[in-house]
Image (cartoon, rainbow, N blue to C red; front, side, top):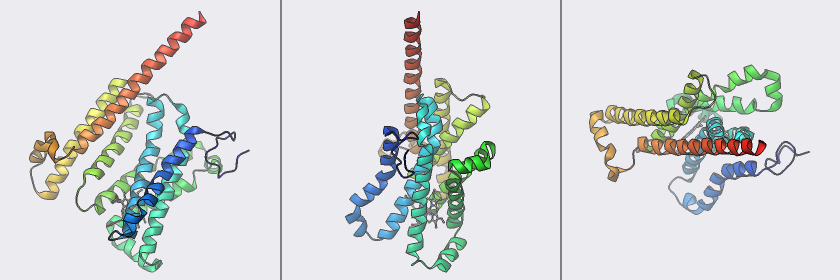
Length: 289
Ligand code: HEM
């Protein structure tokens, strides 16, 4: 029998390399912050630096949690589902830290915290996403799944897509200068949601390699267009002028290319795994004859 805190063990109490890897991934930002401790402490705003780090990693782990379902199908590695809950709760731990650090930046004056949150749009949106994530974390136990019933639990947890959208808006709103990273993050979330929509539309759980390729190209094109229109509106320039620098790699690799590279990596994994599985099935069939 394993204790609930022995996160590195599976349900049967055995050591699980997959769980250990997920735990290491979740602890990585903490280890990095410790390694960067000197730089953080001597920086201009140490507390603000930590608030940013916790918020950023919460968003990353939210994305990683959403990536589990597509990735387990694409990599034909069903066991990945074993760590989805751990990753989701991990994302919540970072977001709880994010809020706690914010409260400490307000000297634990809860009246001031409430005033700040209710008077700034990006904090109202972040706060709503926070409450949503807290609800999902609180209902993530086996007991809550049983109490709510599978169907109601699944419906409730579909709120994660809305929460991710709010978190991304919050991220964009507080980004003052370069929006390359927020656009890349948003395009990855778009890919993950588009994957589910296409699977639902095709009434299948597995998308073909060709569909994955088309999806990645479409998301990449949408990212280029979205970025050009966004920059066009923000800086009053023609989106066509923004699109002109897409092939100018001296000014940086645009998020559209970055999401295309990530999409092509996924297509490659799918291609290799599909052929590998077909080969194994062939060898087994020959051996059985
Ligand atoms: C009550 C809830 C929340 C509060 C009070 C809050 C507060 C803040 C503050 C003060 C900042 C820094 C702004 C600045 O320096 O000008 C920030 C940044 C950020 N927050 Fe939140 N936030 C909340 C919820 C969330 C949620 C739910 C997420 C995501 C799941 C999130 C993700 C982020 C990200 C990604 C950043 C930017 C990090 C970076 O610059 O790399 N926040 N938030």
